[in-house]
Amino acid sequence: MNLLSVVVPFYNEGEALFELHKQLTGCLDALQVPYEIILVDDGSTDSSLEIARGFCKGQNIKIISFSRNFGQQSAISAGLKHVQGDAVVIMDADLQDPPELIEKFLDSFNMGYDVVYGIRTKRKENIFKRLTYKIYYRLLRATATLPLPVDSGDFCLISRKAADILNALPERNRYIRGLRAWLGFSQLGIAYERKKRCQGETKYTLKKMLRIAFDGIVAFSRTPYQFFAISGSLISLLSVLIGFGMLLSGVTSVIAWALIGLLFLNGLQCLGLGLIGESVWHITQEAKGRPDYIIRETLGFNDDSSH
Image (cartoon, rainbow, N blue to C red; front, side, top):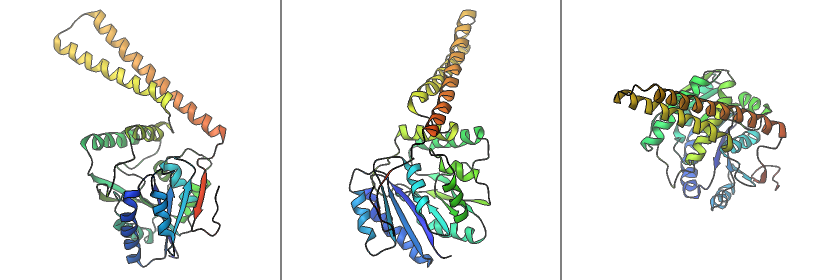
């Protein structure tokens, strides 16, 4: 291998970047493979960018800085556009994805796999997150038009061939792990235990979790349309719970059961409208042709520039 590229998006990870740099460079140096690390600043408002700049001096570390926060998927896409390696590793900056797993990724790549992704067997997070993630991945797999691996995030290695195809895709609003599965080629999942964050608090709020969940299922939904889908689901669920309560209480009134049925159907209608609206939103965003991100500055590249 001539060069291994590692793309690391980050947003307000000032507390974690020092440990990331230490562990990641240590693992990569031990592999004795030429490498480059591309840190993508997704519009951080803390000291993250200044800390990252300090890593660039005299090392094979490069930086892409956005004009504002565009989201993790956009940051990954920007990193992929700038890689030069024969293989590309994508990983988070919080070290929940262990850098030492890169060696296993490389072994599989050398065996001929174009896509090698991590499968989270355990998560050291609160029970709410563990449960919602588990439900989400299985719901996504059940509703997707192609087989998607469950419990698999963005942590992966892809070949140069796969990266070039991803870069050539015309769509702007991207769900990388879905596109990765869509590529086909030879793919392999490697199980690992997801660690706790090394420093700081997660930047993945409930709102962001809901957003990426809808993005995966109905191609990048947004809040106005999500309201109908979420409220419809809750109304239908509430009607089911009320129905069970009535059944256990021995309620036999035809009118009561009819009202519950109407409540359930109204919930389904709201859900359907929400899903249709999200699809329309996706179409309009692609039709507008806006760029997925705006780069303010690059460091460590041959054509360094500010925008």
